[in-house]
Structures are given as C-alpha cells and as structure tokens.
Image (tube, rainbow, N blue to C red; front, side, top):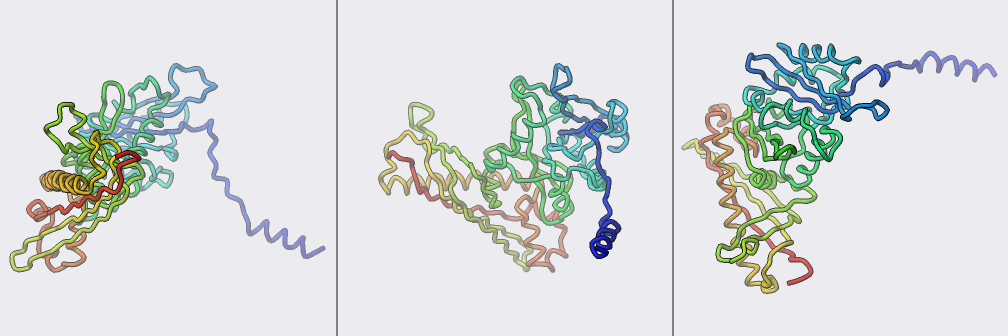
Length: 368
C-alpha cells in the first residue's frame, strides 16, 4: 500500500504541469499578413484575421494596418486597433510589398526570427505593389483572402512554378554567399490575385523577376519537379488554326545535374546544367505520334526550344545577379582557393552558363 502512495507522490513532484495556454477569446488570430515600406521610410504591417461565424459581419475577415519605425512598433500599433492581442502563431501567408523587397527584406523579418511564437512555417511571397493591397482585396467567390493565397501558392508548388519556401527556409539562403532565393511573385488580374512568376533576389534584395513559364523551367533545372507540372511549347508556325501550332506536355520524370568547372589560368568559370525530361503529350492536334521518326523530330524541336529559353533565363539571372542555381556553392566547395581570390557578387554576372536539355517523349495518350 505504501509503495503506490510513495510512487504517486513522487510522480506529483516530478511530473509538474505547465500552464501555457491562450484562450481564443483573448487573442486575434492573424492568418495572413503584409509588410510594406512607406515613402517616409516607416514600415506598415497589415493583418487579416477570421471573424467567427457567430458574429454578424459583412465580411468573414477583419483587416487592420499599423505603422511604425520598426516592425515591432507597427505591430504594437496594430494591437491598439483590435480588442484582443494579435497572435501570428497560426499565420499561413506573409506578403512582402515590392517597394520593401527592392530594398532589403531581412530587417523586417528579424522580429519573426526572434519571437518564439512566430509562424516560421508561413509561406512567403512578393506582391507587385503594396502588400496591403493584396491583403485588403475582396474576393467574390472566396470568403477569406488568406485561405485563397495559401491554396494559390500550394498549387504553384505542385505545378513546379515556385519552390517550396517559407519564412524559416529562406533565412539561411539569404545569408549564403553562394546561392540566392527565388520567391513567388504575385499580382492582380482584375480583382483576383494571381501568380505572375518568380521574384529574383540577390542576398536579401529583389533584383528582377521571371515569368511563370520561365520560372517553371528554372525549377526543373534546379531539380524541383512537382506532382502536376505542365509545359506548353510552340512547335509549328505553318498551321492555320493557332492551337495546332502548340503542344502541351506533362512532365513525368526529370534528371538534373550541375557541373561547374574553373580554369585557374584564366579565372573563367563555366557551369553546365544538364536536364533530361521524360514527357507525355496530353494535347497535340496531329495524328503523327505513332511513328518513331516523327517523335524523334518532335523531341529535337522541343530540345531546341527549351535550350533557347534556358539561355534567356540564365541571362536574366545574371542580369539580376541572382545565383538561383547555387553555382557559387559548387565553387566554394570544390574550388575554395579560387573562391577566396574573387568577389562572387562581381564574378557571377560574367561567368558562362550553358544548358543541355534533352527531351524524351514517352507517351501520347490513348490515341495516336
């Protein structure tokens, strides 16, 4: 009898509880947020929080903004505009306005990395304009902008348009001298938010952008193949009806390899990106894919097209000084002496980057 009692007393002492709960009625949950840089140099923070169904309101979300010299001060201004304390632990999307992204994004993100309650798993994107415009937009068919933006970015990741990035994952890349980050780039089509491509960064500063098509090919060259990736290419110029000049492909498998060579005598760096794509034709209004000769010609045509596009992408990356492929990491690891002798920020725009893309058509549906 004494043994169970003593064991119970010991457990009561050793297994002390921890009361670290927050009542939902005491907090305002921010599901999405935007950070902007104003013309006077101050920061603006905008949040969107859901409105419970039991409350009568025209909108199903509450949207407020606060301004301050720092992000923390702007957040304190937000706290003064809502009845409860703002909680960002459940935030799903963080939007950076382009004016802010064009300066530097780490200082406003610093508060998130220091706060243990921050949602470091929140998706992060750049908006073509002030981020508050996107958060404050009203969608006719969606009750909450936050959920729509999160689903939009999820779809973009599945389609290999953007990489899977969040607030936590971009931090080490920002400080990595040998690679740069590419973030989702959002815009508006009428009154509806849409993905318009990828935002290119040099360090923590946005320096350029890619279209949706170019961003997709870049992700494939980085080895980022999503679960539902499609490409449409123009392979003919002589067809009367426009759709007959194009083919739509579904990516089934890819194989990528990045080879970096350094000529120590001339200090020239050459990077070769090998990409093999196994694709299936899912839309091609020509009854000719049952012949191997026609498939071979189509493969060659597609390879020419993709290699031309890849060269243009590399030119855009170097113009933006964005080492999205991580070529600098290879130089740092395999050629450390050369790395120490150069300034990679000055060297990267002048290196040679060559694409070597091969296409293998492995399927064309249930009809020829």
